[in-house]
Amino acid sequence: MTMDPEERLKKIILKTGEVAPVLGGFEIGVINPPLFPWHQVIDQLIENGQQVWINKKEDKIYISSKPETP
Image (cartoon, rainbow, N blue to C red; front, side, top):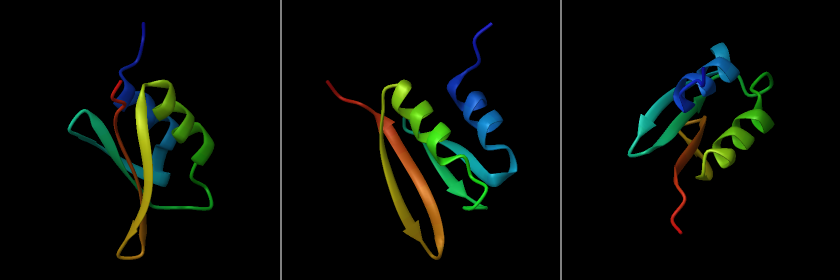
């Protein structure tokens, strides 16, 4: 049985961040940067055909993604 991408991200991130689906992609708020599984999350997004951006809003780091366009 394959896990849906959002559920897989939640399983990887656990309590170090928050995952929200946004327009075919995701917005991930990083709650605990030192413990956050950066490589696994970014790799998972790229493997799912997502383009990835990292930004900081009000002292919190966010990873945003959207489907890659051909």
